[in-house]
Length: 267
Image (cartoon, rainbow, N blue to C red; front, side, top):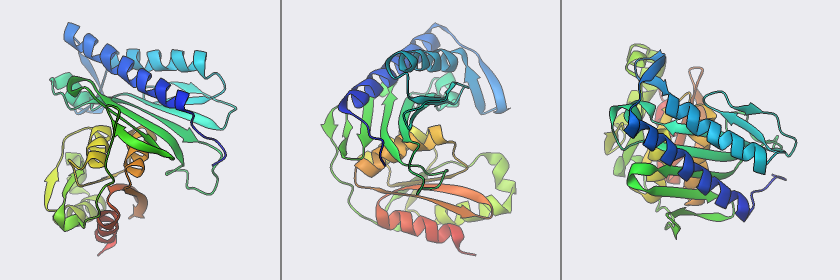
């Protein structure tokens, strides 16, 4: 990767996810309603849009040459070879329901690394902030993963059968064997399963060891890249694998990631 992230980029990313998360939380406390996108559990609120706008406007001012893409439609074509990927509120169903398990997340993607697949590009930094728990994860290549400024210990290696697995499968996919089959095989190999509803919070938890490993299919880049950077910075492994025409995203200790990949493709 010829593009790189500076220490100032990490400081900026941390500030942006804190500000976006605080704004969304304040708006929720004042009262919000949600609008359904693709399903009753896939919703968006005014807080999603406001938090994304805050990040977008700040980046356009401070990083005018960088590209920007956001879950709620933010888009700017940059010239620097770097793109910021925004998830203003990850876990909106949780957010709207009053659960603390949601976050604001941000990644800085390297656009010039043509050796990597488009669905798993190089990532220069990841930042995830869980406001109600006051947890801020940061990490990236050459910079150790941190939680609230403290360096995380390297993830110990372990197999899937020794670990909890954070995952998600919308109920509508249970009737589709090409997805439910691989998911069931991988899930059955774990010590226990957790389905908590925020991919970036899950990946932060994997980096700290509170969750063992994580896997999910068909992730958009804003659900994958922030946490991918942090897990890798904590010494974990990540992978993207295609099974039955669907891409599966996996992160955790190297042995567990290999186990998940094997089980996804078996049968």
